[in-house]
Length: 239
Image 1 (tube, rainbow, N blue to C red):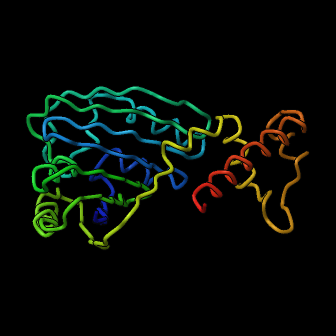
Image 2: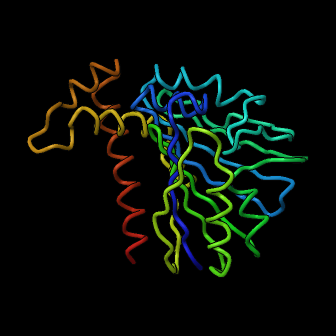
């Protein structure tokens, strides 16, 4: 297997969805895509950030008329169905199914047309940059894919190649992250942001509990459960 990685950088105003990330530094999107046929694809996208910033992106994330896939100046002609899988204070997870594709210059569709065999895609979106990792069985047509992607870019978009490497495994945290309960994940995120794990600590459990308007015992329990789950996952990967 081969990992083909690249970045697409967007000028402000080139894409309304990316503009939300440019304007709001706390936003981060992680997504996995699958496209076995050029006529359909699906995506599972997790967007995290400050609550106010997430509210600002909700409209575009869930609007089925918004084209978040195309990298060219031409919009996709397809049917889009979006479902909200998780709605948390600092996180949204949306599932999007794009079907009956007549025309769409999206990275997964372009790759499916130019590279033989199955492909898996990872996308990370922060600020003005969208980073792609494409897992392919064979690297013989990567050059063709590189040229095609660069040629399809719309105005205000630029392409930057990162690397092509042979891999034996490809770990993803997007789906497994759901194993931590939403309330535990929220407290863990706030604890990290407030400096609870710094040395010396920048915030106490009492202060976290006050901010969250929860009993200290509840905050302590949820924080212990979240860190225990993360420790177990780390140990499982190392064994």
